[in-house]
Image (cartoon, rainbow, N blue to C red; front, side, top):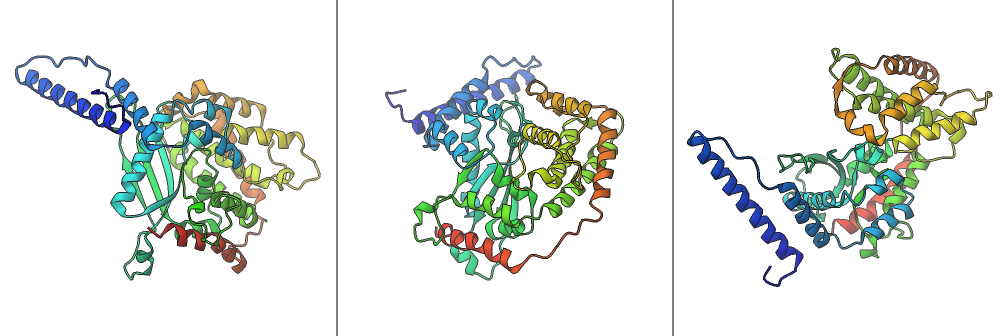
Length: 397
């Protein structure tokens, strides 16, 4: 090591050694193939070397101690489950990879990412060790771009496929929304953006304390103010209707239309989660609660509690999930069974029957629910009170 323990120097040397090893291995394999010899099996587990490299890179790129990250997650009211917290130590190398991906996107597109979080099975409690990362991010352009006549992209996607052949490093996909477009969607009841801000795994939040004259109150972090405002402006009935429509569409596309033995099992979890969300939104015993639980096990538990306190005088008896369905779903999302959700298998007749009957029941119940599709001017003003000073402060780079 030549006496130099700088993380950046160590990482550069480790990267150089790894690249040289891969090059030598490739050249040796090609030579043996040309000579009609068998390719030698790998003699070194590269994944272990990469794990050490990523831990060094994480310590170099992330200055916030892990304990502080976890306490921040709890302090802003995020739904941090015991399961996700217990896996936090294992996910540190992935965090370093994600920070690197975000930095590359910023440099390539000349933007600033002001918020980024996990929006995948990792955020809803159904991930396994090798689950990919689906990152949702909100960004701003430099101020000059907003003043230019040249059009700007409202959203785009960046993919970072795994560089490891043994699947030890997951793929990373980043979907990005320009800040004004994201707030436009939020003001229109967009559930995807709501879950982006609910995610317990947050990788980037622009700090308004670095821009004290921004004009936005910094008593509470701006991302938490966004969550607070969704509770005031989101229409539960409208959100329930759109969620049911998505669930129905996904069921027909990914489950019902598939031939026998060709159904990816995780699709059942996605569809059932949409149904449970609709049940939660329409349940009159939790009208004071917001937002709906993002974590699948907690969403199921919340509905069970609602059903236990159900009053027969309510017009809408939701949350009444049959015990056999509860057991089936609980078994699917048991931590030891989560890797099996990636498998392709047969249809589940019990779940198919319940899904179709429950979606029909929910659609019938919502026929007489009136939904206002037009936004009030006051709602737009409320969102602007967060957006305008945020863009002013963050686009000055």
